[in-house]
Image 1 (cartoon, rainbow, N blue to C red):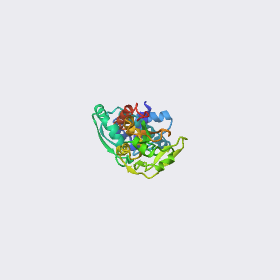
Image 2 (tube, helix red, strand yellow; image 1 turned 180 degrees about the vertical axis):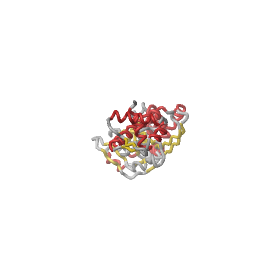
Image 3 (cartoon, one colour; image 1 turned 120 degrees about the horizontal axis):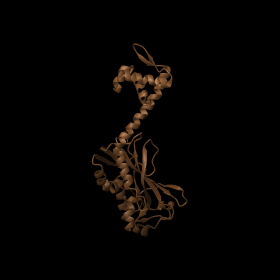
Image 4 (cartoon, one colour; image 1 turned 90 degrees about the vertical axis):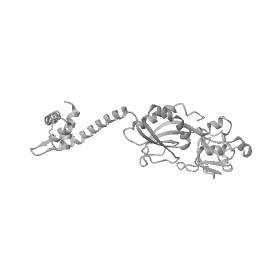
Length: 301
């Protein structure tokens, strides 16, 4: 007989307290349940159940076997559920948290293609620089840029972006360029203020040393496009990701403030709740983003 079926029959007898109720739960006859249990005991060479006219209970060895058997059955059920889940068509509401600048520039323009492929999915996108609590706040996933904090969340790297200090040519003509990181104390700085990172810059010196710049900002704003516009106008030096400054740099509107510094690269990640399985709608969107951004991450992105 099938070993899993024998285990299932035995476990159900223990759970239900008898053969009759176990047979009802399994949808088979009482005699079939009895045969499965008898076959299991014969194969193991041990008595697993104490049988009386009034009740059925596991023996000591039967109780120990039940604990292991129930774990095996649960794992088998989980494996079946995984296959079913993976074959299910993605559907339902997908709730996402994403950084505003990245979302407006690189998510919104590609959503029509995603919805064309997955017409049964709807989406609620909340744009916020804050790192939301996915589970407690009811999000299915989030997009995050930069180093990920230690957590139980699962993450998949989608691509990378560069990050560097930029300013308008007119600014450099008026104030000169910083030669060293310490020179930034004498320049007008434009900070991208986000609750997740704080009001400072993390830079890499030519030696490879990691430095933090906490100089007072002339302007601090939590909108990257506004900060870029301020830099283009000649107001000061901003430290921005490539997906924001790339077009302006190609047009000559801004330049690298310190070309001697190593180019900092930051990962762009999809994060989602932990668990054995990923919902089809979440998996579909993450796979879509990974494919869409596969050719990104060059030096000007």
